Amino acid sequence: MHTYLARRLLQMIPVLLLVTMTIFFIIRVKGDPVAQLAPVDLLTPEEIAELRHAYGFDRPIYVQYAEFLRGLMRGDFGTSFRYRTPALPLVVERLPKTMELAGAAGLLAWVLALPLGIISAVKRNSLIDLVATTASVLGRALPNFWLGIIFILVFAVVLGWLPVSGSDTPAHLVLPAATLGVGLATTLTRLIRSSMLEVIRQDYITTARSKGVAEPTVLTRHALRNGLIPVLTVFGLQSAWLMGGVVVVEQVFAWPGMGQLMVKAVLTRDMSIVQAGVFVFAVIVLGVNLAIDLLYTVLDPRIRYG
Amino acid sequence: MSVDTLQAGALRHEGRSVAFLAKRLRRSPVGILGGLTLAAVLAAAVAAPLLVPADPTRLHFDLRLIPPAWLPGGTWRHPLGTDNLGRDILSRVLYGSRISVVVGVSAVCIAGAIGVSSGLLAGYYGGSMDALISRFVDAFLSIPFIILALAVVGVLGPSLLNLIVVLGTVGWVSFNRVVRAEVLAIGAREFVLAARAIGQTNSQILVRHLLPNVTPSVVVLATLEVASTILAESALSFLGLGVQPPTITWGGMLADGRQYVATAWWLATFPGLAITITVLGIIFVGDWLRDVLDPRLR
Image (cartoon, rainbow over all chains, first blue to last red; front, side, top):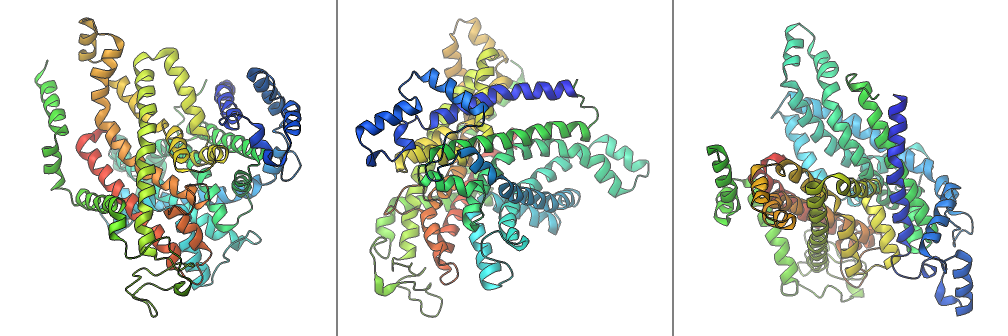
């Protein structure tokens, strides 16, 4: 197990290097990076040259990348122009809020999708199956920011049950988490349904039933454990989608997380925050996928990582 | 060649003819519904200037926030009402389809070109080529699509061309995965060995033998990718990073309408409905194409 963990962590290194390269090149896509980091129209040519020298942009590109990596090891993504403080702490400061939203959305998605997916697989073509299948088609087509606005319209404006935006009380979490969670739940329901359909046809399930094991136990202990493995794999890939959704939904609900900070940074061209933000989001996605790999061993003891 | 292979070949050939597709379409209500929706959206995009009841960019300050026609205070001159600047919403929704269609189709062409060629190379050559390309795929998969697009648009500046280029270069990964897997599955088949035995070069095998065989899956995937690209485009426009006003986008209309959600719900509702219906139509067509062309992808 430990060697496996070590190997997986080692495998993450080239991926992370490529991620850092992507981030490094983002501000160099359009020629002069100084223009991305400072309001050049307000500066004299001498000041620009001075800045270019100060940031080392006049040096060869590989030296710049080495410097960038060295800074990265120390968690140094440069200084934000707007806030005049280091960029990474500004992003990390907002991490708990973003994780609170993403975590609540993920939890809600599983709570909705597990029973719905299992029931619609066991009772095929029933009313619940029809509802779940229709919802999962709709879920693929609904833009989450629009769903958020509709939720605001219905639950905050018309019914007045919940606050429109902000993050002061737990009630503020409900609408943004539901916006993200419902979208994710539709995908998960579809996956759980098809995975369960495949598993419950297998012989070992018939064997378990003929031994007289109670149906709920057959479904949860026998079928679900195997049925969940492919679902988890896709959930790992979906975590990137979830993070992207967080960025948009934070904007809809004025949720003070990393996404809101990043969108503001992009609009004000505060690129060191953008770079730090992309890096932190990538690390989260890689972390979730690593955690899922480790979960496989819990679900299926035959999967042993030596 | 066995009878089975011959039959499979005949089926594949039949699967590509237009007449066969038309025959199959008649049997699928969902496919028909999706096709009609898609045709309506394309017609709106092409013929918007002929269809609109009013100039979509003209401001009428005396006609602000008129509700849809069926509500008290509404008028059939503005069937879906007007926005905060008195512009006709139906006209704007019709015009908005243009950007979605153009960005969705063009970006998917770029993504498809990158993804299919890199997938062919990774699957055919394998080894270090595959390892290198797959690491890139892993890196792209770990950066959320919309966040990478956001960062690059932030640098390049929001414009129609930049949006297409960004969504195209960020969206190639799924094409790569599908094509690579297909090539791995068919790369060792007899016809590839036979082609090599008669002295065809690697590039001839890639283009003449492998590419036609992955085309059905690529067509299916491309259809579904247009749907997700339209969703991504509208999200970026919503965040203010899409094509800029006065060009009309559904995402931009939603962002404008959001502030009026308490007083004039129709501003944000109709563009969102337009996105949902368009994407739904494309998904229906894509799912139907998948069932017909490539049952293995199910």
